[in-house]
Amino acid sequence: MILSAALRYLNQHINLEATGGKTEGLSLAPMSRLVGVLGDPQRAYPVIHITGTNGKGSVARMVTELLEASGLSVGTYTSPHLEMINERISWNGEPISDEDLGLTIGTVASAEEVAGITPSYFEILTAAAFNWFADIAVDVAVVEVGMLGRFDATNVAEATVAVLTNVGRDHTDGVGNWREAIASEKVGIVKPGCTFVCGETNPALRQILSENEAEAIWWRGEQFDCDQSLLALGGRTISLRTPSGTIEDVFLPLHGEYQADNAAVALAAVEAFFTRRLDDEVVEEAFAKVRVPGRFEIVSREPTVVLDAAHNLDGARACAITLREEFTLAGTVIVVAGFLNGRDPREMLEAIGAADAGFLIACTPDSPRAIPAPVVAAAADGLGIVAEAISSVDQAVHRALGLASPDDLVLITGSLYVVGPARTLIRTEVDA
Image 1 (cartoon, rainbow, N blue to C red):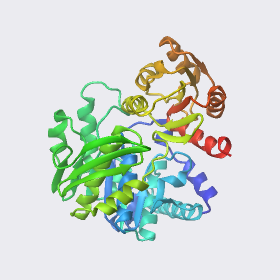
Image 2 (tube, rainbow, N blue to C red):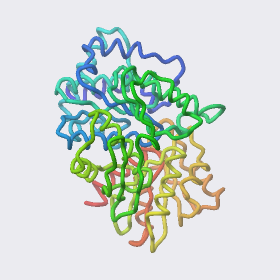
Image 3 (cartoon, one colour):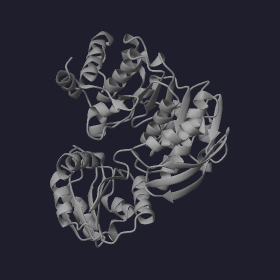
Image 4 (cartoon, rainbow, N blue to C red):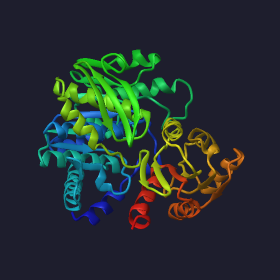
């Protein structure tokens, strides 16, 4: 298939990312059947499998850089994408080409007919990634879980190293023992014989997270951790400890204290994969190259424009802390924000710290699950925030940039369906 035909085929299938579909009654059987017809490509290489509520995309990028700096050929599968669907499937950090993406989706389309099933959008892309990684003979695949865990389509892979970044409130109603329920689902990616690298430190979840057949478990705070994280120009200087020892004063060019914790998880995962210490030079080289688009990313100056896909409460709180602790502003903060259903706009705005902003522009993400901009603006008004509603993301960004002085900071945040289009706009128009 050429890419246009492949995308038409893909879009004919249910997309739970877009619709927020049901999670009851899920099974890996259809996905297992699909990859079985393809010859189980996910078994052609070792896999580092990454789950968690927040941070798994950042950890996937860090793990990829560490493996690449170690001389390996690395396939990486992440979701959702920010600007282009090609971003989800990459080889040594480079997104798959249009031609290869069309071909590998076409292969899955042929397998669908033989398998006699109707896979979802995410299942198709996951199978396409596994198939392409086998075709190009990667040394290792770094695979990010989608919205689930035990029943996530990616879980047909048998991980050598299974990683949990953390357990937080996302894709849940927050009722009852939701943390325990999420932890139980996430730990479902841990397979017999693997090493489980656990970044979650809540002692109340320890028993649930211990109930698996891993050959070894590395706990953050015990076998590994970030022992020091200091602000530095353009990022942080961190010291990381693993069972093999400590590496001091590594520069990480990312904003946010949480990224230091993500770095500790990533380094532990790669050392668990190799079962040895990485050379200090490899670690320093790898972390110096890490970039995480859309995660507290500075994309423009005068005014400073920050993109942060703070799509859940924990992410929103981390965004507020990063802005407060790492930026000294001569001007004011202008916020552009949009959210999806399942989020309480008032709760999200409070978590982001929007009450401290000079102005808020609410926009409507391009998603069937979008909360309309006037609803978000009304929530802001209830918090005493000066706000207006502009449905179009592009128009909202233009409005914010038009209001901002060179000393101001424009924070574009909330849903990926806001941050992604805003990033495209700024790269193609504002910086042109």
